Image (cartoon, rainbow, N blue to C red):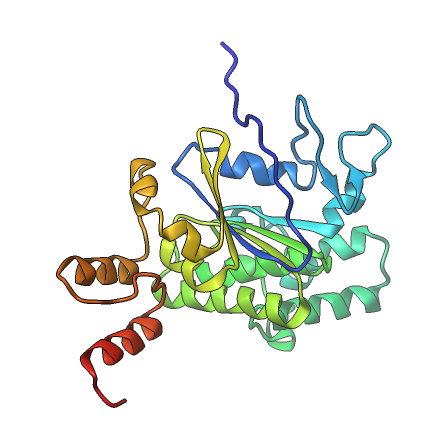
Length: 268
C-alpha cells in the first residue's frame, strides 16, 4: 500500500520571510521542508528555489543545499568532528575555501550562536552540554552562509533557558542578516512571538496559511486538528467569555498586560 505524504501542496515563500510551520504529528511538516533543498524530490509537481527547478536532472543540488540550510531535529546527533573547528568548518572546507576563509566562516558562525571561537575551536564538540552541541550543529549550517535557514524543532529537548537562547539567536539572525527562516515547531507560543506567517499542515496538505493573528483566530479549527493556541490568547478568550470587552487578538504577554491595563482603567 502506497502512503501519500504530501498532496496538492502549492505555496510560495518570499525572501526575508520568517515562517512558522505547524501541524499535528504526521501531518507532513518534516517531509515538506526536506523538499525545499532537494533532499527529497517530489514524485509529481515542481520545487523552485530562486527560479531553479530542483526536479531537473541537470540541477546542481549541492549548490542549492549551500543556499538552503536545513537543521534537523536533534542536530547534535550529526556532530562528528574531533574539534569544533573541524566540525563547523566541514561544509566550507568541502566547498573549496582556503584555510583562512574557513576559519573566518567558523568564527562568524560561532559568534552568531553565542559561542566564543578562541576558547572553543580546539575542543571536542562531544564535551559540550546539550544546548552547546545544538548551537555547534546550527553553526555548521550557518558557516555555509545560507540565504534560507530551515529549522526542524530546533529547541526539542532543551531546558527553558536553552530554548530561549536558541530562539533569540535565530530571531537575531533574521533581523540582522535578513535571512529567510522557516521554523518547524509544536510550540504555539514560539510561533506567536517570532514569525510573520504561519503555515498549518494537516494530513499532507496546507490547511491554513496566514498571519499569526489570522491563524489563531481559528481556534476551533486548530483544536479539531489537535493543535492549540498560545496560552495568553486562550486567557483573553476566557476573559471575553466572562463578559469583559477585551481584544482576543493578543499573542504575547506584553500585549495582554497593556490590554488588561486598558480595560481596568489603570495608569501604567
